[in-house]
Image (cartoon, rainbow, N blue to C red; front, side):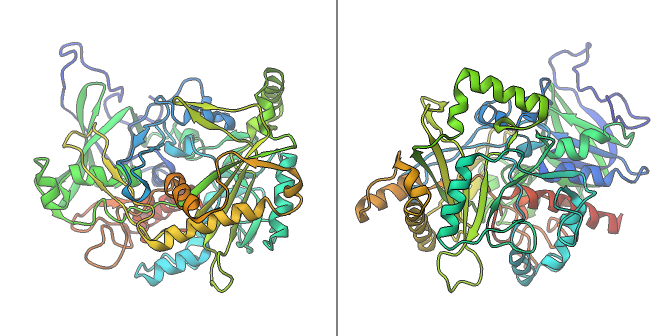
Length: 554
């Protein structure tokens, strides 16, 4: 395998002929083991292997794809919900939304969710990191984070004091702007929200054209950006299709991980430590399976507590919001669903990397205030230049002029949690969301609904607007029913391994798991509070930050 560690046995994961079909114990040794080849994990592994005298194993439960379907930006409409690419986690009923049960997509290939997401690149607001620092997380202020963001990216806005020009992660402006998006942009501006040139630059508040994690019109996942170009490094070994069963603890220290791969159990030993970058769902699950968590909850599944921390899996945060379909009397991207126009669009992408097939999901992104006296923007807006819905488990794109207007609350106050379903690592963890538990979040959704209604009354969109597909006529009772039944996640779960300087936090500000030496967490599960904006850029930044912190001590 490319990237195999020198002097180690071949890392092929096949069952031995002498013992076919049975679980066989193996043992391999590295300096570091990184669990999860997603947005943060790929960054961690790549940066750690920049020192040639340091060996790293990157462990990923998903498997590499052969057809490279994910490189087509528009393919996200195929990969999300497809079990080949998506773990398709399912939540428990949410009592705050009339018992709604929904799917939570998470990437099932190297690159993790960065391989199937909407490719929206937006940093958190600068004030978000200053708030993290004020909560006791020294080293996480915006002043600390800006150099990390600049180091990790190559943006066609940069290099400048705000943006990077030499980092692994490519970020580019849209290569296709649908005319209907200009109509919506002008209407948003006529509502008093200013247009800004770069939503990730000096002017964070306002509406702007989206930027995407793409390169020449192709998706640039973190696997593509950080790992794939470096598979030839002799100090990097990649284990895909490997389910992590637990972190191996000895004498209060993480010394490796136990994995199951192709029917065989293997132990990957870590001389210097283990970095968990499995995401806000799987990282807390691995900690619990390793005996790190609430002793009473672990005991229910026959797991002995090694380290007591009742906050593992708690503090689950998600951006609640609304996806509203509107029909217009001018063409939208739904027109590309015809065979001829679809073929022409594919050819345009294949030959030039342009057109609707080479574009991230969102055309516009904006941040604004629900109340003028607020110090910071508390709401986010996104525009998709197409509209679709699920019918009988399949995504349908009507041949009608549809757009999707998305509005979400940046800083939810409601909190959910996670619970083990069993001690079997293959069983998905139970997800308990509670999006509307806090009255402020309900009020934010009421405001979202009002904002969308006001938007379609603003010219020039007003002259193009035909009708909403699902929003009821205004009325208190009808609005409440709609909000309870239609508030949805924006797929930004975070916070389940909260970072802090208090004894109840799961990880310290230097990302160490409390009570365990040589064990770090580097993914969005460390969020002490939610951020304004999509989470992928911040996840990559956390991976970069983690590698730098580890470099300081090793």
